[in-house]
Length: 534
Image (cartoon, rainbow, N blue to C red; front, top):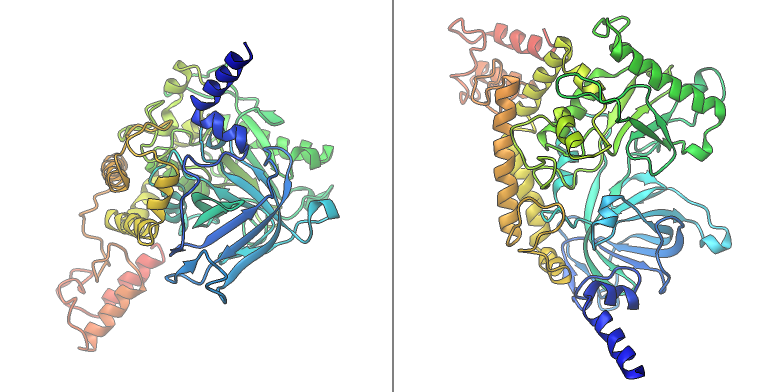
């Protein structure tokens, strides 16, 4: 009987690779713990926890060391054989796991850390530091691309929106070791938090102007203390879904740090904003929603969600913040969480290229999901003023950094980063997932090149559909675009100056901006007026 019990225990462990690994090592090691890294083009990060179990709730003391010899330089794992390398950061950190589905549905776990001036056990407190050239702060994420096999979707969304939004997180690829075991490619990433190098939010006070800011809320689940909106989500046709709710989590300050006065103030401001959106005169520029919302911030947020067809967009990880009234009394939006966007989802029609995500509540509700898109987005998109801003901004984006060729160049550049030094090969050895379904993949790629090709194809189709719906013709001639780069800038003025000085005749055919048959200073005036929005 004893032998039978031992054999049964052996079978239980042996027949479950994941359970076997976690039985010996609770920190979720990769399938292959013997991947070797000698040199790489990416920064190398070592986390040392000395065998402690990393937790989701309570932080533990760890040590973090990052080697980064500069962009384009080689970083070596053997620091004894290669002394004199640049240590980007070395010190104690307060470490824990982070994420919702990115934790529970991924074998490869993301982390959150706060740099410390000493171990927690010795009374260490958090300190602000730079990481890989990103601005000083005391709160950082280490993202763990897993379901996103391209490893690009989060960073791509941030980069495409960066020229337009007040703040977008920066992230840098690195290769990570935990207690000496190679764990693969991760992303050292800024968080959308209150720091001066980020959202730059003041701590709220108790009265006057100080009470009015700054606050960061998040539309999300009810796994934390939330404030429930007085309004419900809406269907595609504007019907209230009275059995569904909009919930706000408190991020800055966190709920336990809010005073009663601050709680009442910020929830009251949410009520005021939503009351304005639901009023009969909500489109009125003086008393409607525009008084309480930075409209362009919402437009730019919507473009990011819709371009990526983010199936979790608007309803999860949707962060909204407010500064003090003396700075800006309106709510603004900031981006986060795109790892299952850009067609990387097999649920709720996430792979579609020909629907609006803000209209997805019918699909969500019919599938029993309780986290739906707030009613704001239905109301905003019914306002002709908002729709006009959306179309104009889309045209601006498409003529500049969201031109299809520039998006593809960005993807190619990121792919080169991931492959040129062998990082993707090593990550795939540690986590062999090519040709395998990983939740919630719609497309199961056979290799990295296959995944990148699929991503590009999906984006091309999405751009074409959005262009058609928003009335943008990417092949139309842009008045004032003398050099043909798709946008009107001061460079176009320089081209005309050079033509008039006979120093450069390259743009002879396009320098006659006003179409009067000759090139004169009047053409320069036309471009000035275009740049001024006249």
